[in-house]
Length: 283
Length: 309
Image (cartoon, rainbow over all chains, first blue to last red; front, side, top):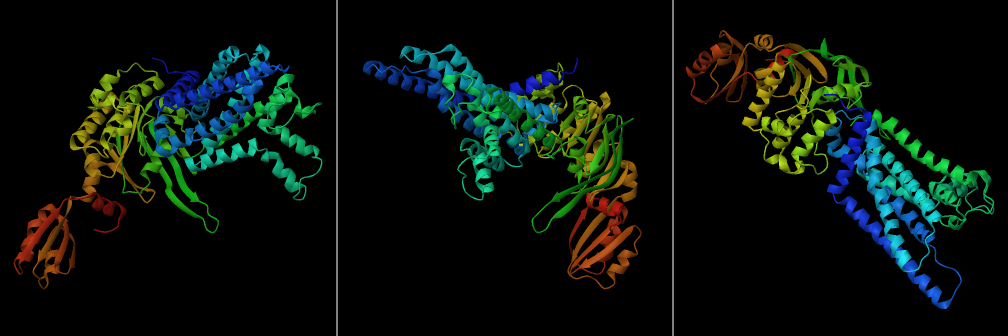
C-alpha cells in the first residue's frame, strides 16, 4: 500500500474535474455549441464557395480563415465564462474543504482544475474543427492541411491561455460574483483592445494620437488576442484574422516567435502568481 | 511524541475598510500538545475559536503567528504528508460536485491510494443505501456520517473531527462515539471539538477548554469533575420569598450561591444539598414549582474561568 505521488494525484484531480463537467452536463453543452458553430461556419463557407463557383469568381473559399475568426472570439468567451467559477465556487460552498482534507495540495487544485477544464474546452474546440472539415469538403470549401494544423495549434494555445487566465482569476477571487465580474472585465479588456487603447488615450493627454507611440505598439502586442493574430501570421493566408491587421514588416515584438512567447507568458505568469496567493489564503 | 503541537498560535482576522478597519482575535497565544494515542476533546462555547484552531491544524487557515506541528510535520510546509495519515471531518463542508455518497468515499480511497472497501466503510457509519444518492440531497446528519466514513479511509494515525455530532440523531451520536473508541483502540489519536459536555466526557481522556480565543484549561475529565464538584442548580418558585430564607439557605452545607428574583429563588449547590434547600423554603412559604438542573457546561466554564457560581 503505497501513497500515490504528485502526478497520480494531479491526474486524479483533473479526471474528477472532467467528470464534474460531464455530470453537470457542461461538457455536453459546450461540445454541442462548438459542433454547431463549426458545422454552421463550414456550411456557410460552402454556400459562398458554390456561389463563387457558379459566377466563376476566381477565389476559392478556404476553411481555416472561415473558422478561426469566430472561434477566436468564442474560445476566450467560453474559457472565461465557464472556468472563472471553477475554484471559487468550490471554495464558497465548502467542497474545497472536503478536497483539501484529502491529500491534495493546493498546487494540485490549481493545476488539476486547469488541466481538467482544458481537456473539456479543447475537446469542444477540436470538435468544431473536426465537424467542419467533412462538411467543408462536401460543399467544395478547400481544406489546406498546413493551415488546419497551424489553426489547431493556435486555437489550442489560445484555449490554454484563456483557461489559465480564468483559473487564475478563480483562484484569487473571494466570491463567485467577483470572479465572474473579473472574467467579463478581462474579456472586454482583451477583445476590444482596451488593454492598450485606454493607456495610450490617457497618457497622450486624453486624445488618440495620430501615430501610436512605440510603447503603445509594444503594449498592443502583449495583448494575448494580438499575440494570437501575430502568431498566425507565420502562415501568410492566416495573417489577417484577428483583432488587428498584422503589419507587413512586423517589428520584433510582433514576430510569430515572440508572439508565442507572449502567449506562454500569459499561461505561466497568471497561474504562478495566483498559486502563490492561493497557497496562503484562508479558506 | 505529540500528535498535535501548537506553540504560541495567534490568529487575527482583519477586515480592512475605507473608513475604519477592525480586527478580531480568534485565537490568542495558544499552546497545546495532544499526545500520541489519546482521545482529546476540545470544548468551548460558540465562537470560542475551536474551528479556527482546527482550521489552522489542517492548513485551511494560516496562523498570524506561532508554529503548528501535526504528526511531526510542519503544517504549512508538509501539509500533504500530514493529510496522507490524517482523517478529517471538517466543519462547513459541502458535496464535491454532483457525486454520490459512494463516489465521495471512492475519491477519498483513491486520493490516499489505499485498498479500503467502500462497502465496509459505509456499513460502519450505517450509510449503505443512501450511498447511491447525490450528497447534495443529504440531510446534515447523513452528510456527517458520510464524512466520517471518508475520514476513516486508510486507517489514519490521527482523526480530527470538528463538531462531529452536529445534526446526528441519538443513534448516530452513539455510532460516532463507538467508532471513536474503536479507532482509538486501534492506536489512532483522536482530536475532536464539541460544545456538548456529555459527548466529550463519554469518550475523552483529556479535554482542553477554549474560551474567547484562549486555552483556559487542559485536564483529564476526572480532574475537571472534581473541580466542578457536581454543582447543581435548583430553582424554586414560591408564592412569595420568605423573610430570611436566602440567609437560611446560604447557611446550608453544600450551597454555593443564592439569588432571588421576584418570586424565584435560584440556588447553586451540591447534589446532597438539594433536598434541604427545598425544605428550607417549604417551611415558611408555598412552593409552587421546583426545577433542578445538573452541572452544565456553562457551570464548568464559570468554574474554570473563575467567572462566578
